[in-house]
Amino acid sequence: TKDLVITKGVRTTFGTRLFADNVPTEDAPMVERMRAAGAIQLGKTNTPMMGWIGATHNLLFGVTRNPWNLDRTPGGSSGGASAAVAAGLGPLAIGTDGGGSIRIPSSLAGIYGIKPTFGLIPVYPFSAAWGLSHIGPMTRTVADAALMMNACAGPDARDPLSLPGPRADYVKALAGGVKGLRVAWTADLGFAKAVDPEVKAVCERAARRFRELGCRVEAIEPKWPSPHGAWRTMFIGGIAARLGAALRDRRDDIDPGLVALADETASWSPTHYVQAWFDRLAWEEHPRRLFERYDLLLTPTIACPPFKVGLDAPASIADTPTGIYDWIPFTYPFNLTGHPGASVPCGFTRDRLPIGLQILGRRFEDATVLRASAAFERLAPWTQERPAGI
Image (cartoon, rainbow, N blue to C red; front, side, top):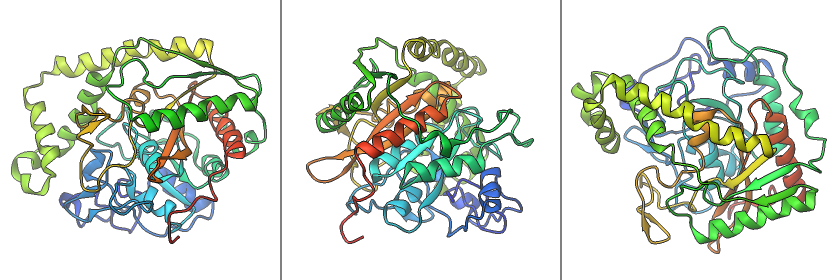
């Protein structure tokens, strides 16, 4: 269980010295439901402080390494989970995702991960990324993720944003094919600053293979504006608010990179934050229109392969300088919109570093995303691939 997710009687630190001795008195809903379904918790998995970056290291527990190459990051913020599953420590893991934190590490560690439709699996207590944060499965196989979804989907009174209604049978949904589905592929969404050429080539080949499954695949070039400003304001603003007085009184216990970002919020007005919500709602029109025409959208999960362990982000991609979140342009937009999205292993770089393909579907059509994931897994199986020595 990721260390951002509370576990009754088991220390939950949120990856920070600020909560080094925190022992919750209750389970998060997903943990509660996994236990009820017979799952055995093996331990807590590492995360960056409050999940602030897409790599996994913190001042409390240090770095988490990628089993495929110990000099590289397994991603984040669910990087401890992705490393554990990739290394074979367990078949199932719980991840959270406020900007890509299930999909990013799944891609970088060569496993499967799905961010469900927002609210499908309840989130409690509220995270710093409230309104953006999802919780969901990280697994070796699509079938295992569907099994977790069956056990964990459904409303909970503690999360007022959790979705009501009957639960689907996600395991049963895997049996169907995807013949006839309309599939869009884009390598940049219209605003990615840079994409590694190997990542682009491997993902494009994988996208074309959906034609072998009977899908109608079309390459598109959307001219969407970047929603980065809205997401960044909401994401960093939430973390800064959660830090509160600690940002002033315990700065040495906060990751330096996070301090720098959180300090920016001191000059923000309430109007600035509310405008981000308006911009979020306006941007949702772009994927909404796309999904009127297509059943699925395929993109690279992230813009680069695993980078050096200990870094907060890559300094550049394809010789283009990149900022702290420029390498995840394909994931955070769909935290703003709540669409279900999965990362499926689709190949490797020349250095045998994993690459993931992102499969996105309409809201509430998680079964379609899982079914497409399972069909691709049958076409291009990945579970036989293992890191060296495992």
